[in-house]
Length: 392
Image (cartoon, rainbow, N blue to C red; front, side, top):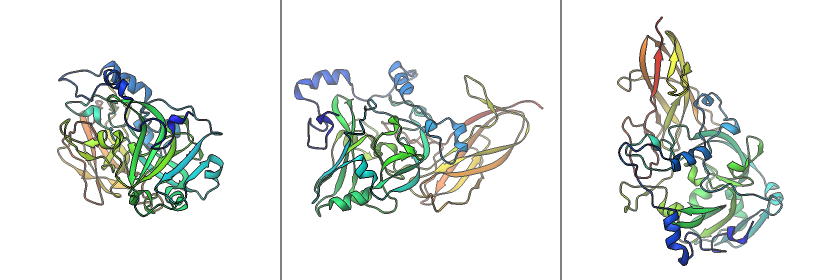
């Protein structure tokens, strides 16, 4: 890879284009916007949707998502990674800078964690007004077993200086966003980066196989409990800094804000969500589900980045009344993985709307009205599944 994909402070400026290019880049990459009333999804959103894909909801039956069914979001292009030349550098406020090739990294003690990962924009296309971006409904999620070197091991080897406050992670993916030319770059507070529970990984394997290209081959970050924007793919550099990182993906994008000029609050941990495996069989176009009268098993998965899910309730009358579902026993070996739930519903002829709702150990519960924000982040509005029950 060229030198421009190096660490923070090396090569081209981290989060701004060359001054002579400012106007053309702004023309090519306009500011974020909201869709006009009744504006249909446009070709730009459709192009994003064809590059990225979500989890088919019937795949919620798997405790570990098959790799090809796990959701994918790629900001720019998938880099062409040469494993022979790939280096992970660790620098900045450290006493012992590191430059590790893949063999050296994979020779270090490894860990494997089962982690449910969700895109911060999951649910965006259900908002009104709709933020114009990747048009997710509820399917931007998956659970995988990630294997790699604990980040705290690398930072301990590099001997982080006492005045470091954050670790900044640079990926090899490069592009333009809202007029700013940049490598994809995010940071974590040092306390998160060095924590033992949950343990952040520099991962090189997914479900016992090398990372697929779209999932960050050869290296990516895994941050249990955080939305997907924190899980930097195609990881090239880790730089320890003495001040909070103010790059685009940290200070401009991924903020909860109501208006375009607000500083907003950072998007971090995953809000609770329960999803139902749509029962019966679908209509091809509308995806309306069809069942026959009688007992119907309903099941799905629930998760939260704030703590374990402790309750799932189900409504069979469009979120008017609720009853508790049965939760699978907690799995201490996988505290950052989703939890199965199930119940039985007696279907009667007519149209029904089924809605699951999750609550976590910290008392966070899914809302029944949309939690709107300008970026369309963290929209954990309850799922609504239309079911047509045929006459007996």
